[in-house]
Amino acid sequence: MVLRVSFQHPGRTVVMGILNVTPDSFSDGGEWAEREAAIARGLHLLAEGADIIDVGGESTRPGAARPSLETELDRVIPVVAALTSKGAVVSVDTMRAAVAEGAVMAGATLVNDVSGGRADPDMLATVAELGVHYVAMHWRGFSDVMEELSSYDDVVAEVSSELAQRRDAALAAGILGRRLILDPGLGFAKTAEHNWALLAALDALEALDQPLLIGASRKRFLGLLLGSEQRPRPPRERDHATPGPDRTVGSARSLGRPDAHREAASGRHRCG
Image (cartoon, rainbow, N blue to C red; front, side, top):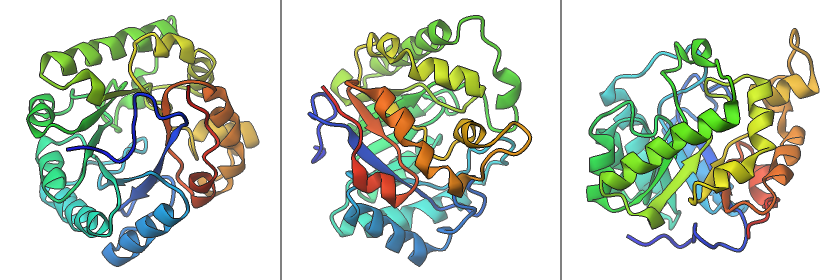
């Protein structure tokens, strides 16, 4: 399968519009959980300038419970099929190999796995067999425990090392290097200070020699920047803080993950 966008040398940041089809999304509160609303939202993001629509049926907010496999499939597959039938480039945000396979059969051309293949032992081999692009994110545990796992002596060095392990595992499983993208996992088992440290040291992540996916929009560390520890700004009021992390990406070969259409339309990142 061939994507209509290039990740290796795109000349600019490729913009990924996030479509959460869950009732408990941290970003939008479940606004797009209904199928028809989700499809309309995905088409709107596409019209606003998103290159890829990322469809996810499992909330990864801190403390979230996992849906059943059947529930996740029911949420995701019809939306993926509808969007790809309209010409959209679609990725599926899932930690389950069965959902990844179903979504690719429905037209998805990228698997975005926040666990980097650690949640499902069949994921890497399945993606290799499917022959699609794959995002491996830095991850230390499921949502109900990840805040307990945010201990680092040197967050940049440790995230780089752990991502290198996921890169090597993906390559060993047969995923082609030209189809592999890495994500430092901002907000996943990381404090606000960890997130800012990673954004300030993207050159260390670029040294892993794979395109990067940077997902900063609407995350809690932006709410803290705009508010306080006691009163962080609500997710819907964090959009104006997103350009800061966007510009930090600089010349990284990257994808950006906007949760709101204003960012999807802007394409603020620059890629070398």
